[in-house]
Amino acid sequence: MNITGRLTRDAEVRTTSQDKQVVNFSVATNDSYRNKQGERIEQTTYFDCSYWITPNVAKLLKKGTLVELSGRVSTRAWTGNDGEPRAGLNFHTSQIKLHGGSKRTESVQATAQTGNNSTAGKGTEDDLPF
Image (cartoon, rainbow, N blue to C red; front, top):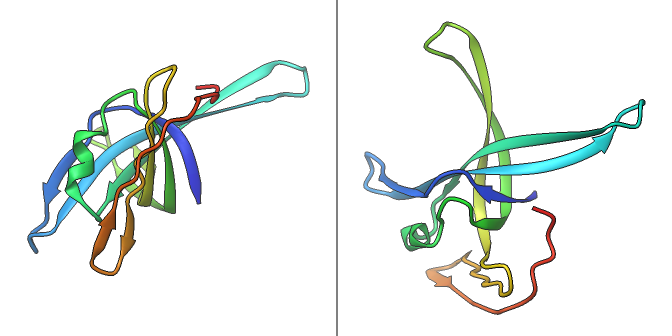
């Protein structure tokens, strides 16, 4: 699955009990549609994301950054401190593409290859409606 959205907070690197590092961040995606009355309805979906390939990418993942992510989605449910049931979406990220400033876009693709993490950058125009 692919999603495009903006980071809602800076990425954090955490270390598991097995000494593996994971990058955690959150992304908001926007969607809109028209209802039967013709009114435009805006809908925002939040994803908690994890990235296991390299912790170095955390330096680039700052709040407000526009990203394209590839990976898989899972759901989780829990009970909040107020006793109410909650649910959320987790996105297990395998590829990240960063979109930078308004005039110029930077792309960083990190893919899992056997023993090799690759990073590539290129500039393009950013026409996304976010």
